[in-house]
Length: 186
Image (cartoon, rainbow, N blue to C red; front, side, top):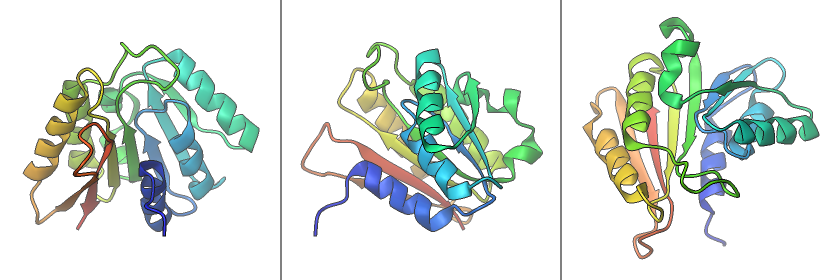
């Protein structure tokens, strides 16, 4: 049996949690792989929102979705600006949120996600989206990535266990390999 890739593991978790008609968020659209996965799971009756600070990422996501016959609401903004785009009540209906941190593959490697904005977004999700599965993929191998991974780990460890279950999946013998953090509602 092959060890699942990080993307495969993330999508396996989404397969088990997201269903037709759900409202979901891709917190970092990137090239649109997670956005497409979410759109395929929620179907025409669901809602997919995808954030990215880079227009070229949103263009790539839009193209990937269109090729597959799906759509999403694309939001050209940082993921920590959730309350600019959602009411607290609307966030309360979110069933899954996915972060794929770092930089845009094939893009400018100096434009990266930041620990402070990621932490703010996680705080907003755990405050308002209390039934959401939250998946964070962190890449410690780039400039700022190790700090962001440690910040995510600290955030997940600090969550009250009576409301959330936090888990960590990663390679223990590969320092720069991606890590997956999951936050499950109780």
